[in-house]
Length: 113
Image (cartoon, rainbow, N blue to C red; front, side, top):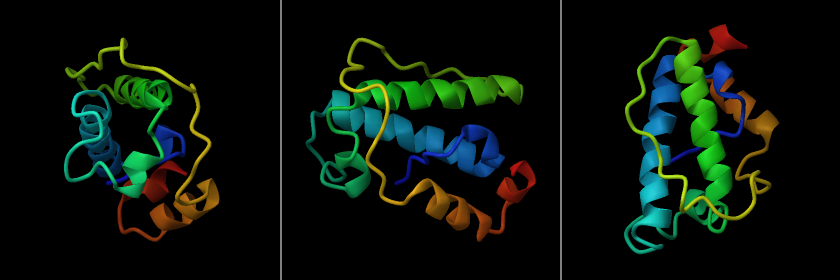
């Protein structure tokens, strides 16, 4: 499970779509299941506790990138549960470490740098 912190324009199609899918799963854990279930104690989940507004904003950034690439988006989030801080300040990996992680993958992310 990963929600990147770098700008979505740097993600290849595979990573952009995967993050969107993961974000929806994380959103459900935080807003519908209220921290119950298999991934509720995962480090990626824990860093978003109390920051559903920031997670909502990340989703909107992904959706904007979808539109820029002419991808269709059919899964909006309900804004009502978006509470807390608007930005994420806790990182599992720094932005630079995330860039290195993506740079080491054999995908098209490198084409977007």
